[in-house]
Amino acid sequence: MATKIADQHLTATDETAIKKLFYILRPLYACHWIERNRTMPPTLFHEMLGQGLAEDFIERWIGEVLAAKKTAAEGERIGIPSGPTAWLHEKLTRLQEVAETLPAGNRGGALEDLNALFLQTVKGS
Image (cartoon, rainbow, N blue to C red):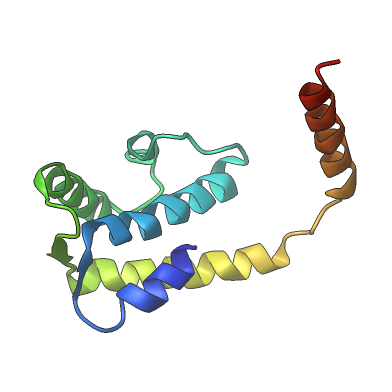
């Protein structure tokens, strides 16, 4: 998701909608969290900040964007400095490479169990 949005919104101009920027940042941070901590990331984005997942200048910039988001109108655009833009692209590329090395795992059994639970719940038994 982050890569697709970045390809659409970080290439044409030096600015993007604040909302779209967080559609890039949230999954990027979540992937980085999983890689580093080997645990599920927090649901709340701000809980991933300050955990050493990004350089200080990126975290300061994200803090500024979060503050701007609080008062921004829907669809409001924000300028993105070249440093954060380069960082975003570099991290997205690196995390995509990491993802391609991960084993697919056995998802069949878990899906079958989930389907059985769903059917049991729907039937009320």
